[in-house]
Structure formats: structure tokens, C-alpha cells
Image 1 (cartoon, rainbow, N blue to C red):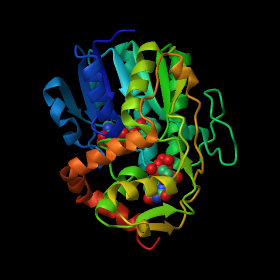
Image 2 (tube, protein in one colour):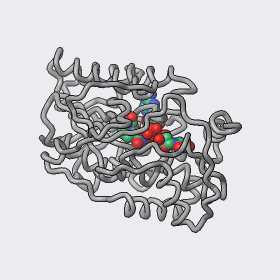
Image 3 (cartoon, helix red, strand yellow):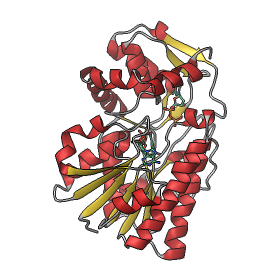
Image 4 (cartoon, rainbow, N blue to C red):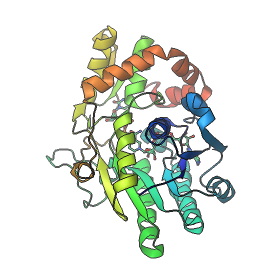
Length: 336
Ligand code: NAD
Ligand code: TYD
């Protein structure tokens, strides 16, 4: 499948901006429109070097006028825009439903009207729920068992996407990516939070006993997986994207401290996250059969990411200096 003009929602966020960087390298002839509300997680600095090559529309995916404006003449939509942080969904779930569910529906409705060739929904392995105590790696046909307001909203959005494929014949594909890390990640998810805390000699708060495992995948691998599914995925199908890694939180913390030459005493075990999912793991064979392969094993990907945060201290210090970041640190971590 070929495209000329592509709408990337949430393109000023972490994975969206990594995708825009990747897409402009792979498809230099593309016209890329980015629609982003610029919430606390959106940052135009993430797209700074690419500004002359993209059209940016500031707007809300849940607002049909904004969406109408951004989708004009577009032949593919990639929906990255979301409220994406589990802890924030525990503090206040409503924006998760508004953006992740209602926003996805508004995009789908406009995509039908415009007659886009393909709609790609960026989803998550968290829709499968907790695999704690099992050897299993989630397969695309597995049932959904979301357990946090975040994953519940992403699962609801997926159902709406499938429904538009089935009921209205919209060409839809979905990706279910695993935990992602890399450049431009807002310092609230574990890896950028721990790197930037360690650089400031602040404690690394591990929930519970730190044994929960995630399948950490580099953002560039996630971007190439999404691009593969956009071009080669079968209409109406979902594809797992993961790195075949199983890394406990304790290992994340230890590797970061070791690489930065910081003491292990910075690790602090804190009260567990309510409803904490202790294991996610996907089987990405179906995406691999389309020709996708992940390039970054965790140690190499983490080393490259550490380098990026060391070289871009202005970026994360500005982000951490903002009220939205300080509010989260205060309301979620103080007294934990
Ligand atoms: P992020 O929080 O870094 O970025 C989200 C972006 O969406 C921001 O630029 C924000 O301004 C924008 N946005 C939020 N609400 C919006 C709205 N109503 N209208 C327009 N723009 C809006 O998120 P991320 O980590 O880059 O995640 C991107 C996508 O990938 C999400 O759909 C997420 O569910 C999914 N995902 C993330 C991970 C991960 O580990 N981060 C893993 C798998 C899937
Ligand atoms: P996170 O990066 O929030 O991603 P998600 O919950 O969406 O998978 O968390 C990844 C893992 O790290 C998860 O097991 C929770 C744990 N974690 C901590 O131990 N401390 C922290 O401060 C954070 C943010 C996460």
C-alpha cells in the first residue's frame, strides 16, 4: 500500500515524534500533517529539526472541527494521540476516556467521510492484562483483560476501531506495542524518570518489590513496526510489537545507576501501584512475518538512550521544570 499525505495524531509526543523522524527518513516524499493538542506530554521541541518538512495543527482529536481541518486530503491516519500514563489514569481517569475513546471515535468518523485508504490505531500490549505467574506470551487472538483505567480506555478504543472496520468497511489496522523507551520520552515512565532522577541524585522509586517485568522496546523499533503494519498489515487485523525482553524493574534501576556511576543506595522501594500488572509479554511473530524485526536489544537500546538524556539535558530539565511535572512528583510520590 502506498500513501502520499499522512496524518499523525500525537506527533509531538514520545512515540509519535519518533515515528515522524523515522517516516521522513523512509518516505521523504510524504506530506506529513501532525495534529496534537500539546498537553503536558506534547512538546514541539521533539519535532524541531523537522519543522520545515511537516504541517503542524494544534488541536484536539476529540474535537470534530480540529479533526476535519487536519484530515483534509489525507490518505492515511496514524492515531498515536492519547493520555498514556497509568499512574495519571489512577489519579484521574476521565481525560483517558475523553481522548483515548471519544477522540478515537471522532477520528474514525472523519476518516470514513474523507475516505482514507487506511486507519492505523496505535494500541498497547496492556489490553491483554497481567500475565503474572504464567509462561504465556500474548497472542493477537487472546481475550482482553485490561485492569487499569488507561488500559481499559485503550481496549475500548480498539473495539471502536474494529467496529468501524466491520460495520462501515473502513480499512483499519492496529498495533499492540510493548513498553517503549528512547529519545524524547516524557520523564514520568520508569526509564526516563529513573535516568533523570539519577542524574539529579534523587531516589529511584521502585513499586513494591520491583519484580514486575516489562518487554522494553526501543522507540525506533516501535516506529519501524508501526510503519511495517501500515504498509503490509492485513485490513482488520491487530499486530503485536515487542522486543522479546523480560526485564524486572530492579534491573532497569541497577543498569541505569551502574551506567551513570551512581550508588545503588538511590533505589527506594515504595508502596506498590494499585492494581499493578506484574508481567506483560507479547509474541510478535505475526508482525515479524510481515518482515519486521526489532534491532535494539535492551542493553544497547538503554545505553543509546542514556547517551541521549546526557546530551539533551536542556530538553528534560525544561520539561521537569514545568508545573505539570512537579505536580505529578508531588501528588504521586511524596509520602509513598
Ligand atoms: P505521550 O504521552 O508521550 O504523547 C501523547 C501525545 O498525544 C502528546 O503529544 C499529547 O500532546 C498528544 N495528545 C494527548 N491528548 C490529545 C488530544 N486529545 N488531541 C490531540 N493530541 C493529544 O504518549 P506515547 O508514550 O508517545 O504514546 C503514544 C501512543 O502509543 C499512545 O496511543 C499509547 O497508548 C501508545 N503506546 C505507548 C507505549 C509506551 O510505552 N509509551 C507502549 C505501547 C503503546
Ligand atoms: P511505566 O513506565 O509506568 O509503564 P506501564 O505501567 O505502562 O507498564 O511502568 C513500568 C514498570 O515500572 C511498571 O512495572 C511499574 C514500574 N514503575 C516503578 O517501579 N516506579 C515508577 O516510578 C514507575 C513510573 C514505574
